[in-house]
Image (cartoon, rainbow, N blue to C red; front, side):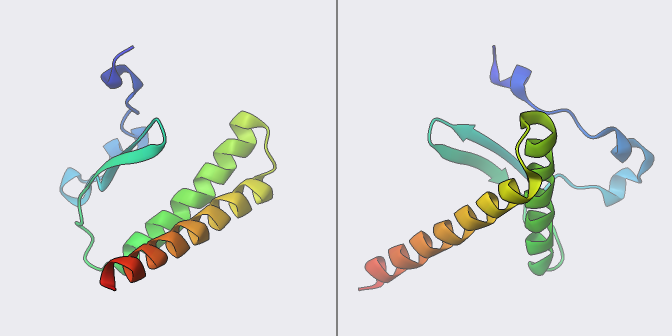
Length: 99
């Protein structure tokens, strides 16, 4: 199976929107043990990225509940805990490189 075969389709609801007001913000893939991504910082305010990431986490937890049979609240907590852990690792890494 090729990578193109694994790509997600464009959401159907976007067809009803003005194409001039729609922008793809990210493509994220998981390869072995790390994410690979292309991002486009196209939002007017960086804080909107936080909103998008929070929505993404919530929708992932819903998908794990529906498609994998996990408890939605537990899946959401796991996602948020991993977010906190990743931020702690990044902060520790910055401290090490600035010394």
